Amino acid sequence: MNAADLDAKDPLRGFRDRFHLEPGLIYLDGNSLGPLPLATVERVHDTVEREWGVGLIRSWNDAGWITAAERIGDKIARIIGAHPGEVIACDSTSINLFKLLTAGMRLMDRRQVVLTQQGNFPTDLYVAQGAVEILGGRRVVSVRADELLSSLNEGVAILYLTQVDYRTGDVLDMASLTSAAHGVGALVLWDLSHSAGAVPVDLNAAEADLAVGCTYKYLNGGPGAPAYLFVRKDLQARLANPVPGWMGHASPFAMSPDYTPAEGIRRFLSGTPPIVAMNALECGIDMWLEVDQAALRQKAMGLTELFIELVTPLLDRFEMEIASPREPAKRGNQVALRHPEAYRVCRALIDRGVVGDFREPDILRLGFPPLYLRYVDVAEAAGILEEVLREEAWRDARYSVRAAVT
Image 1 (cartoon, rainbow, N blue to C red):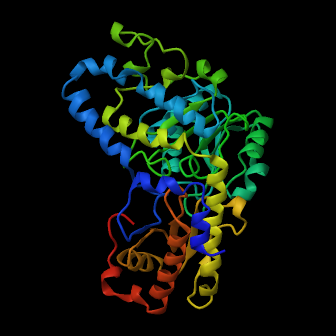
Image 2: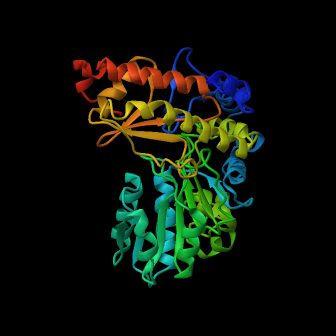
């Protein structure tokens, strides 16, 4: 079956028309920044002009601003397999990581180790290192993914993992790793930034303790959109928010000089939520609630399989290798290609209308989000990659200078 036939049978094909997509552009970087949902344009305009411009301070009550963090959190919960009241939309991924790592380490006071995988997303490592320095007497231990199980012991306070590797798309087994960590009495914290909206996530089925994630990749919340955090319901009262703020207070407008944490997930709020960004995010989340997750995963595997099939003949010809898992179920919605001039190849592709990105030291990273990407786009992108490599278009001197964002 050719690419056009696959598109004709695609049950998700109608979602493409709900995005602002530049004609002729093949966008393979939705695993870094998702495209703009058309509904978001109208929602942001209404937020600014009517809710803010006319409603002013009244909109905290009348337009539901004051409940946005919890309302949107409950919607995200449905996407990641959590119960209502276990997820809240707030802050950035980094801030939420700090909150949950610090709270978790305080709870597990007699245990000294935060265990994570080598090559974890850099901000995860930075935050972990900063948290252990502040608390003192703890350390971060990074091991290869295949060493995680053997490294678990009673000294581990938190097993702290990213479910989908940001470079290669490698998917970790959430259920088995969570179970193993619980077997030695450790908490488990998952970063879902590259998995929510890309691969099936079921936090409750895996009995996960804590999780965080960003929303501006697959969930199409917009650049720098608010992130979210998850705390299993029975843990919430046992964890203290290390960044207590008035929005996490039991009675924020009592203006008490003493902090009393709110009941439930709201205690993990700190400052005032960014309402324009929250409303933009909610548009993306509302669309995701319409998506059949099984169909999404099936198409994602189909798109990446097609791309791998088409580029495999190019590997030996052009000193290139596939860095992602070859088994579809172990691969997220991206394919990583290693090439000695990956950065310059990426830049040449962008100039020919195929937008991917580069990750050090030699990875061309291409994302395949199923909501708007077509099989014909994948086939065309593979053909343009072959042209760039065959013509050595990447040798253009312009591509030797690194841009600030790669």
